[in-house]
Image (cartoon, rainbow, N blue to C red; front, side, top):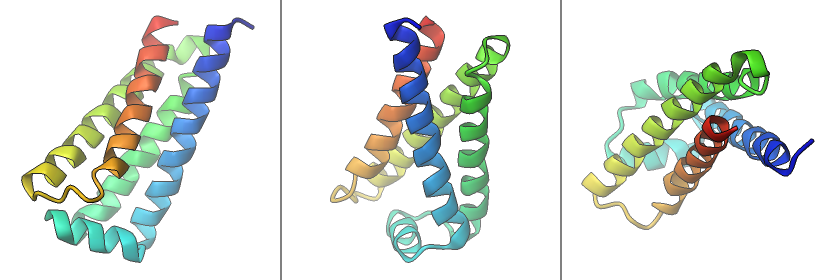
Length: 120
């Protein structure tokens, strides 16, 4: 196994895990999720859909670890990049900068997954 393959595996598993975690928080209506979404102007009704998108992205990343399904992994990573880019825009539009690092972190993980997937 090459170093690039190990990096792809580690980053993809990490990105999938954090997305599963935040999707669970979205779907459960965790207090911090409700507070943050209200602060940036995301309607509460969107949370189940956003959670489902995060779960779908995580599933696509994991399936994309298979050589035969690598394009699915790239598509899932691209979808997560766009999702978190939207989250960053919502934070900036609402001028909620005190916790911008959180969507930024998820965005960076998705970008890293995308970069490794398409370069492998």
